[in-house]
Image (tube, rainbow, N blue to C red):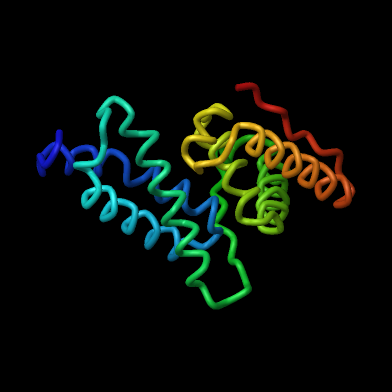
Length: 174
């Protein structure tokens, strides 16, 4: 895989949608998410010779993406975050309106998390990474990841409960 443009092109193509989606959840801005994902792929290509274990490409790529998101967040000059568009699936179901409202409420609560807390929530609940995988991705001890995830979930529960609703955010296991 080292230096093989075709292999990297295939891996990049397969990963792009997931990278943009993950970056979007972290940064809460579709344009910044695309920039961060593209930057991550450029960095990954540049740093590919340093990847010691090709079997760990996905975890390594997540680590590169998190760094790109952090850099992108620092570069942003505006304070206002625009939420990603919410698309209702299964529009024929009677509870679609409530589901859209729930997603909007959760997106708003995510907007209020710090970048560090939003990163661990997205990596754990969106990508399904374990706490140890997140620790490797963000170069922090597992205890730090557990603490950030716990605080973020406490905040989200409180934020959702304050909105007049009982929070139904589940605790994940890893």
